[in-house]
Length: 151
Image (cartoon, rainbow, N blue to C red):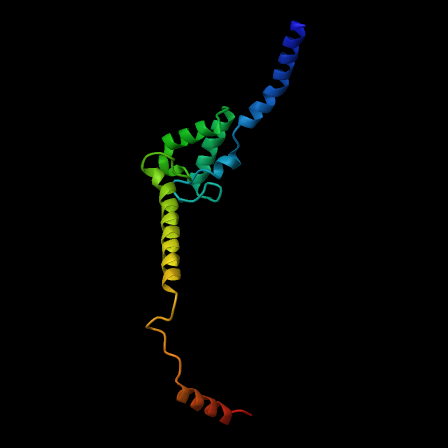
């Protein structure tokens, strides 16, 4: 019974190992979407400069060596610097690239909510800026003028 379990586990491992290796294997097209050309400053996927071609060859060699996406990105950072990554790292000062837009959106939402609340509270009756209703004499004159132009 125990031998069957061991054989079954070994068979399952043998069948799942190629699938796991294929899932971890990096692809040039996926990495091109995540890194920049250091010369053009555009995504490597869109860049056509000679430097972009050299970068693609460099990535292809790393893929052939069996490196994962993370290892390839680390090698690119060592080779070209942090500017090669399309997304900034999520630590240190670069974290502000993620936090500032979120905080700005929250501040704008809070300001809008406060403004709407103040506007609704102040909107009870006519304000001083609104014109007064026309007098009885003005209303009669307006009706007479409109009747003259009635066709």
